[in-house]
Length: 369
Image (cartoon, rainbow, N blue to C red; front, top):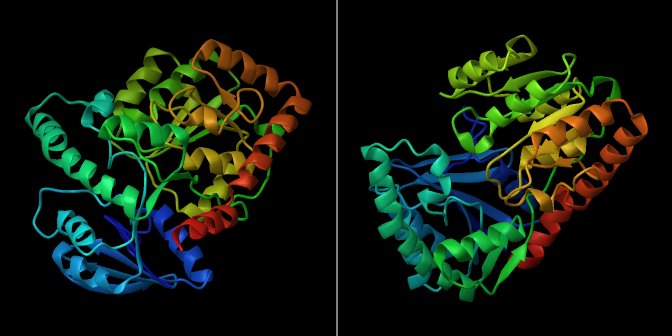
């Protein structure tokens, strides 16, 4: 079977972080005998192979012609940009015009209005322009295309919440939706719980959006005893704002921010030095790094909103609670009770095994083929 995977970004040797979760799927599809070609809209044409996956970067109108040779198209975050050659819209129109069997994975931003990200609203001219474009051009086009996909192939969604979010934002009812979380590499993120390090907390987040609620993680640190520490790995313009908050809460001596992106294969080694992972959030369709921490045996702390309760059960597979005083109290309790620590980490690992990359790839392929 020939499958075209289309995404606005894709990893390469010089940029290994771009939509790695798309690549993880493509690699598994190839292992399962599917002939996969990944297409990425670009101003120029470039072809390369990345870890056994064929990749073609080309203008959108060129991709719109090339996909006619494939039996199925699988879309991951192909945004509709207002830029020639990168728009993505010619690809969508080609799929509809030529009645190509198409599936779309729901991630979030491709079906959400900017109002859903109001926590990042800068209230300037650019922000207003983006809001107007997305509301009056982007979403109407996406609504039309999604109606076609619902009849042609269907949707895969990481969570029930994401499906409901898409229907609410697009103001349509989707009939062909399969819940299929992003698969977790449980071999890479092997189970290595460290009870003795439970007071050492880790947070790996971009510092470029308030969506990731790193400020909430720092506020939690302030409620914990002095022997709890927090190391944050990430880059972004919010760093100074976060450091100011840490100073205000008198926790700057227990907080360290390392401005670097960690190679994915190095994250398990990093995690092995900690016992707790903070994945607080204001919005998430799943929380892949959170699930990877659960797989690795860290006590994982997140927020009781959006899709998180579908993956973290409070005091069963992690901590899922918005009241930070309760979270702090429970985390201190776990830090003094190894049996409780073992129960939660083992239960979280068992749950993640059910959505490991092998299981999820098999499920995705059973839908796509």
